[in-house]
Image (cartoon, rainbow, N blue to C red; front, side, top):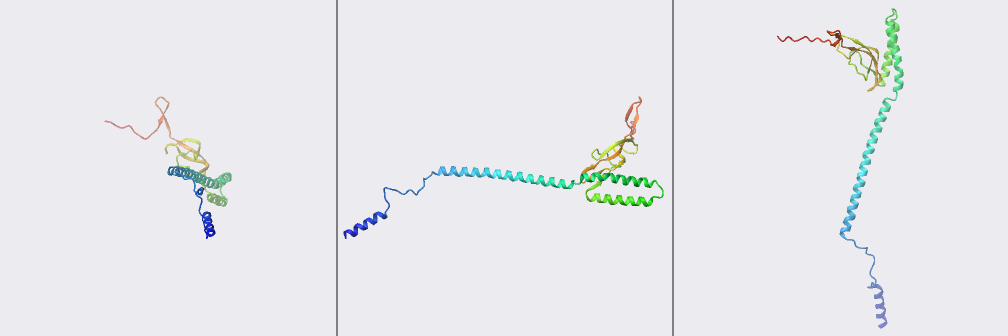
Length: 208
């Protein structure tokens, strides 16, 4: 009996944890204040990263929009140089028509050249080329090139009265300015022989 009790006591000692060596599995406890500070720091860091992401996303969208716009502009005006070189051909066709009309017996030639000119203009129109309106329009330095100034009593000043060479637009961009003559308001001599202000149709008002 004594040996059995001794063995039982030995096993009990082996199974029970030693009081002299406490368990070291527990981590070092932190105060609640330290935990809150660490959490606040992580939240602030996340906000900074979120702001950086939003700025980068906005910059990328702007870059993509500008790149797409530049690409559209390139394709719209890629043929500008070629189309500009074709304009003198139109000029020559128009001169041939004008000259033929002054020569008797050339109706067939006129009709052929007019048909060629019409087809040529229709082809250019498919690529966005269209003529600039000139005669009767107000002078626009962005579309017209004034090569002559004439006095005209029938129109107000700064009006295009004659077109020497047509101008053309490529979409909304000027391809070639029109060469025109611009009407100036006629001037009248002053009492001393100098130049007075432009003549007007206004009569003096009778105050009597």
